[in-house]
Structures are given as structure tokens and as C-alpha cells.
Amino acid sequence: MKSKTNWLRLRAGIVVITGVMLVGCERRETKSATSPAEFERQGDIIVIPEQSLLRLRLKFAAISANKIQSQLSAPAVVEADPQKYANVFPPLSGHLTKLHVQLGDSVTNGQLLASLESPDFFMAQDNYVKAKSVEELNRRALARQRELLTNKVAAQKDVEQAVSDYESAKGDFDTAVQQLLAYGFNPKTDQLGQSLRVYSPLSGQVVDMASAHGEYRNDVTAPLMTVADLSTIWLTASVQEKDLRFLSKGQEISATLAAYPGETITGTIMFIGDMVDSDIRVAKVRIAVANPQNRFKPGMFATVNFLGFPEPQIKVPTTAIVQSGEASFVFEQIKPWILQPVKVTVGSQLGDETIVTDGLEAGASVLVKEGVLFQ
Image 1 (cartoon, rainbow, N blue to C red):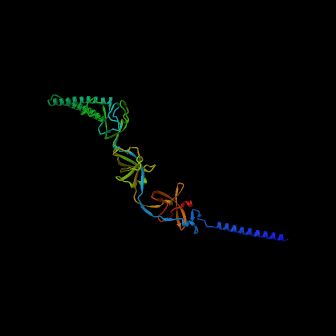
Image 2 (spheres, rainbow, N blue to C red):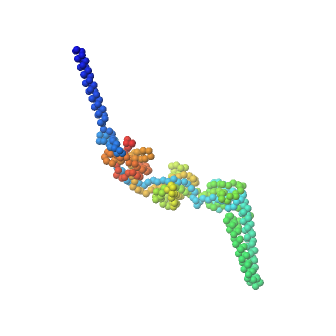
Image 3 (cartoon, helix red, strand yellow):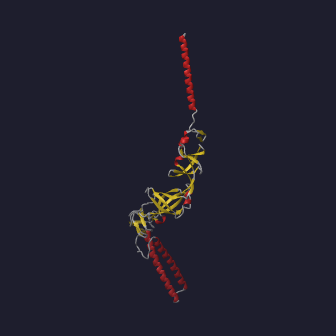
């Protein structure tokens, strides 16, 4: 009987201890479940509770608008000055008997470049000789008729016919002279019977050669060679429509070339296009750049840099910007410890700050860093 009583007491003790342990566990679980969260979400709004340790970590900055002179840029390509660049064409078809220059040679304005044996040119010389002979014959006949009229031997109508004949012959002769001049031949100074000669239209260098000794040139629209003066080249930049207001003729700009990284060159705006491309909204701007050593070659790629007008712009610490896919956000403090994500459009970076072109207004308070915690 005593043994049974002891067993009942032991069971009662175990039940009491177990109940106490369960109550303790329940209290601990309740305490853990009711501990304050670091932050709360209410839709897009983020609330930092008073007990949150984040209040010790988060820092905010008031945003102001400052006048900033933006650094703008535009892609460009090197081109030859169109007024100092010429494709040299043969005026007539013929057999290319001699090239007097080679690729890369320096030439002067009027220098002999090539000689051709051209049947059409020889025919033009022959027409000149015949026209000159007929003109002299009719000039003498007119003089004789006028003398006879003075001596009352010839009639007036004979003189008038002689005048008509002479004027016709003179017209044919003048046409023959002009034709030879168009071929680069001056009948007063050049020797008849010579080959057709092609001369340089400007001073510069032979930058392209498209012909060879002995070939027959029957296409007068195909150039023999190209001569260019590259002492001054053009940078042709494609400037966005919105940036044209920052440019003016005569303005000095700087540029960098892909071929010479780290090197900056300067030039002067010579022309701003009057037309804007309707598809890509850019206009052509040409800048003259000195090229004394011919280092800058037509076709090279470049970047033209210029400054905009000082304008009020908003800057934020770069660490305040949070990237989400292709979008950029900052967290604005709309009330103390209440944050709201704001989508922004970012511009260029200036040191440890970034220009915000849209989405924020001056006076806003933004989270300086730790924004990734709320993504």
C-alpha cells in the first residue's frame, strides 16, 4: 500500500514538472514571435519601427539643386576637308602611257600627274589646226573685199558675204580653242601633237592610286588617283538635337581619337548642319583640326567633347542609387523613418555623386546607402 502511494506521488511530480516546462517553452515562443521586426512593409511604403536597430545604421541626406556645367560628347569620324580633296579624272579615254607620280607623293597645284595617248585629243588638235587655217583664210578674204570696195571694184554685198564667212570661221576657231583648253591644253603655249596631260587641281598628297602604266582607260567617270591636302582635317560629329543649343560656329572643342587613346586634340567648329535627321534626331557638326604630321587619317573614329551651359541640376550620392534590372531607384524619406522607393533617371557621374535628371526634386531627403536591404 505504501509503495502504491509513493508511485502516485512520483507521477504527480512528473506531471507538474512537465507542465512547468511546457509553459516555459510556450512563453519563450510567444516572446520570440512578438519581438519587433527591423522594418515593416505597407505596400510600397517601408516603416522603420522605433525599436529597430536599423535606426542606428541608416543615414539620410537632403538633396539640393546646384549649377553644374555638363560635359557632353558626340561620336565623330575623321574626314578630309572637302575643299582640299579631289578625285582626278581623265578628260578623255585613251592609253595611259605614263604616271608621273606614285602613291604617297607630294604634289603641287598644276603639277603633271599622268599622260595618255587619246585619239579624241589628237582629233581635237587637228580640228584646231583646220579651224585656225580657215579663220585666217576668211580674215584675209574679208580684208581684200574691203580694199576692193574702197577702190570701188567690189560690191557691198561681196563685203557682207565676206564678213559672214569670217564670223562663221571665227566661231569655229574659238570653239576649237575652248575645247583644247577644257582638256588642259593651251594652244598658245603648248606644242601641238603632244599627248593628253592630266594635272593636279590642288596641292597635297596622292592618297589613292587607281591606275597603272599601260592600261587603257575608257571610263572617264573612274578616277585615275585621288589628291588631298590633309594638313587640316574635319571631324564630322553627330550631335543630338537637344545638345545643338550648346554649340556655335567658331567655338573651340576638344576631341579624342580611338587610334590615340589618352591624347586630346582641339579644333574649331566650322559648320553646324541646317538639317536634323528625322530618324535618329542628330545633326552633322564639322570641326576643323590641324593635322601637320598627317597622323589623323580619314575614316578614323573619334569622340568630340564640349561643355553645356551651367544649369541647376540635382546630385545624389552614388551609393544612394539602387539598381533593379534596367531601372534605377532611390529611397526617399517622406516622413521620419518612413521610406518610399522613387524611380529616377540618372545622368553622368561626377566623382562620388551622380546627376539625377528626373524623379527627384530639390529638398528631398534620401537614404544615402543600405538601400539594397529594402529590395
